[in-house]
Length: 373
Image (cartoon, rainbow, N blue to C red; front, side):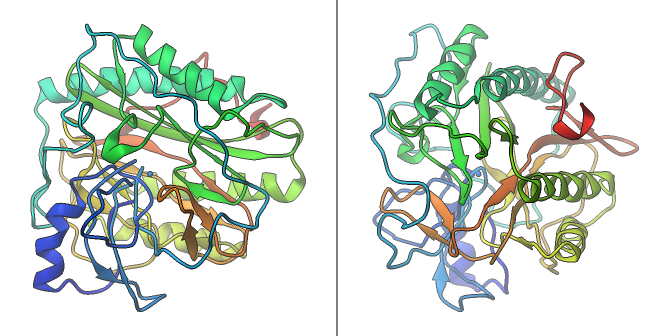
């Protein structure tokens, strides 16, 4: 959720370094005095949106970029609540460089096509973190029941991550206050778990889990039905999944990263949906959010070409209504402008010699999707 659409000016390129310093989550308005968090947190980079024609900051998603607006605390179904106190991490857990002060120290390369090729040892480390993230996400999804609070999901994710020797990557990334993102209904991404936000029958919720383990991040998310969802919610979720899987299927050495967005756009538009433009996928590994930037809509951006050893996320956010979104006053929660629902899926992906491998793929014990039951 890090990049933007449109040509880059030299100033934008220079500021991209700052933008990429924050978490891969929703893209936010560029505010030089504020730290950035993105589908999690990342640093901002001012760019011009082809939709809004206004400067916006970039975030890598988990944390992307979004234009702020006059919207206060959304008149939609979801309301701001009260987060619990910051959860404690035991001293024996290895910390990412931002854990104590909220400031990511590792910066991505300036040029968007400059992409790290992971060594076999790095791939093994990321694979381990990705598997831990998958296990934790499966548990969180199973716990998303009617009457459960999002804070309880956060507690579960935090506890299960620590049990596996890991650190919950979102925690204090550019100041994000919790250990997981829980985005319900019209929340596009980066929903903050709270003590009074309770799941209701028919809700859809995206749970975004990232685990930092032995020096590497593994990042994944899914959208779950709470109780019994209506048919339109199921169609949105299944279409998002199909577009995501179709985009993953084209990945192999030699494919430009810009081709991913067109595959997603063609599928979602045919169903009457839109793909969020101001949040993006990102490189992941030793650094939470780095190159490449993965745009989930048709584009001709030169964000590099896939090569064996590249590791990145694809994480489209697909909306029932308009693609535009607004940011809550918490400076994290992004909701659709029209308050219609949004769904998302995400994998950490490895480019192999002949194709692609989902490092966060479901296991034999993972819960099945509703259409598989």
